[in-house]
Image (cartoon, rainbow, N blue to C red; front, side):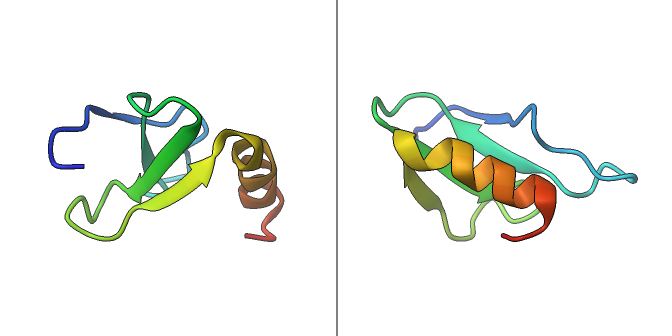
Length: 63
């Protein structure tokens, strides 16, 4: 993951801009996700099928 090219997710937000996640597009079939405030911290690896339910859960507060 040290050579991954991270970008801020378009789903990030928050009123103060502090609820941000970064994602990496370099992994076919998977979506790595990390906290933009803790770039050395853990990475959540979601398979492509889990990405949409994850985003929906974040939006509705269930994740």
